[in-house]
Length: 414
View 1 (tube, helix red, strand yellow):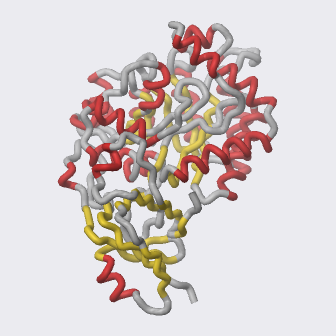
View 2: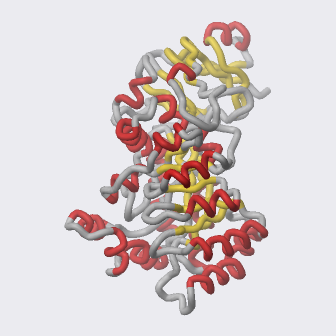
View 3: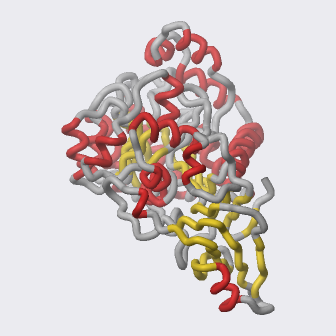
């Protein structure tokens, strides 16, 4: 007989339920259940409420008790909607050059940047890539992140991009944490492609995208629109072709130059990510659309640049998700909670806005509706922090880690 699992009691249980997807939030909007508990069966939440009342309802021999002995605050498992964690090599030299005054684009033109990682990742074996991806994903899970978006984009040829997506899929099957794959073959035009940028993208459409569909490796297509990457016109053609093949669309936009937001809104992309250089007009465009902005404070920290205007986005009525952008070049840290806390203090975000950005709003940016909120029918993905007040989580600025993480209702070994 399949048994229920009653987990608790928690000093505070934050459901993140009944909170709007768009706009600014007050901490008073957070649903907090004192002495809370969760009942999970077959990986999904059956009921959330007062632990003692749940014990009265479910406390029989068909229920396993996962008892919490110490103070603990429970939140939904965190979600990172933008990462590049499948790579080989290091870009420590790039970082040293930035500290010495070189810009990101100057380093790329000098042989560093994305192209450097492409060379190293192409020669790495699938086994080597799987080992490094596994290590990074497990590190995420220890920190309470239970769903991770992972992009390809570090091989930039058909064979290599398929290798990366196969590695992401294989790793996803063997780990508890969920990896959501995205094809970023349109990261930049590789140095060894003999043709124009439009010809490169057309080659991706003809050779790579149908094979991704055939092998069921991803349902998401991303493109980098910016100086040194692809133009808005090139991106529109490529994304329209990808959409006709049945892919969801996401966009790297407005990191160094404007333009990506307009493309995202026109084509109805799931998200547009980065946004450090966006303007007020683009904020207004996003507010009138269903596109979710994903801001990436890790990139701002790694490049020494300004943060995306999170406060303006929220006040304009936009949604807001937060990703780490963990990658070997511009965002090598990979600590989602730390970055969220720092973004919050600089952009004056409430704790409710910060937590929403790494739970249910991040889930919706990935097109997922079964996580990020602790409610009936959702996955039992949860992170428990050893404190009595939920505000301690952001207050400690990333130095407080969860003591227990549950994935689909099962305790993970940290």
